Image (cartoon, rainbow, N blue to C red; front, side):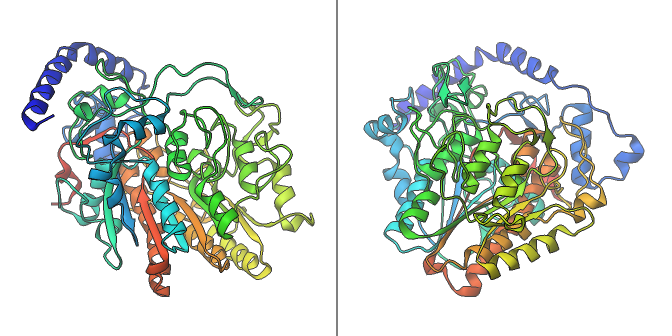
Length: 563
């Protein structure tokens, strides 16, 4: 299709989209109505907030903000609290993403697309597609280690960070609106230049939307009815473009009704190189288990492998590094896979297990095992106490492999983790770290770094001094993971997830969102620092990306500066 015909087609689509605006407004209003009225800060409280916290609080209080909004209705600050089918940036260090972009795009080839999706997605093939697919991130890791000799691979996932979220953090940190398109500037992963770097963007669409499952049988109980795909006519060919059909990114378009991804499906694309059903982990659309890049490196090259996350240890993204399951909600079984214990997916022959597992989930006790099957053990939602005892070397179990660092009242989290790390290295053991506050995540950092979140659609979290003292940071955990994994002379693979970016965007909280990106940046700084100190870029690959985006529209980015 030439440019003139393509423009005419876009015009026709725009007219069709506009004809549905009234219906879209009604739909968006219903979404907004589902949000309960929050407790609005008093004028005195508002006056004590820093400028970004005040922007957030005022937007929630009035339910509108001229500078931006989440969702498909500009008049509502919080019209949408879920993911979106947007193109997602990929930043590569020590390698190139070029072969998957432009002429190498899988979206130009109907045969390759049909093979990837198991069907040819509607309105998805485009002869001049400039973007790649999320599964290409897996292929890059595989190629780098299989043929290019890379020994140290870091997959850094800022969960939920699309181009718009990245820009918000970059504008705040640099105190200027430094770009309107492209890679951008202002953040560490935008400006770092001590090695070969590259930039691209990918489609995150799943095979299909989530269905009901039988966890015990590891089967779907209903067929998939809504499938994935990407219509660039509606959502754009570049991540900085504004969508033509505001309903399309959230799966409600009357033109192309494609499913948007969840974290389990998109993380599976990053780690296993396949499209799967939302809610599933490392299973193809026929529910066959697929080997992840970490498992493959562990099996074929003897690599040490690990995960670090700011949210619960077996949430979808870190679990996708290693576990197999039809349901991302089967948390204890996902943890069992990660720790090399028998699980519902690997009953008689457990997986070897990860060498490092660090994250949250501590303190989340429940007797309700809904979604976790018949083998759920009442107690901690993510790590059953008896499973922890099985793997903890301090219990005297001769088959235990992990030095365990668990949040302990009255003990500094960073010091506790550092001591456990030293012991794991000295005794040649694995490392398990289990921390967190209420809801299982590490304390949310805000833009100014004070860990005092303000109001959002899920209320405002409040942390005690103990919450702050007794938990390490994501950067602390990243350093601990590197210290253990580097002992393996064959090499290692490490996933680091800044999962709180996703939680902030789900809550429509610009203050927490910026803070989460900056927190993840500090973890990335540990990775770059380790590689720089060893002068190891020839042997290293670092990929910084996200599993999916949300639906932030930053209309006046200058409000995030102090000018």
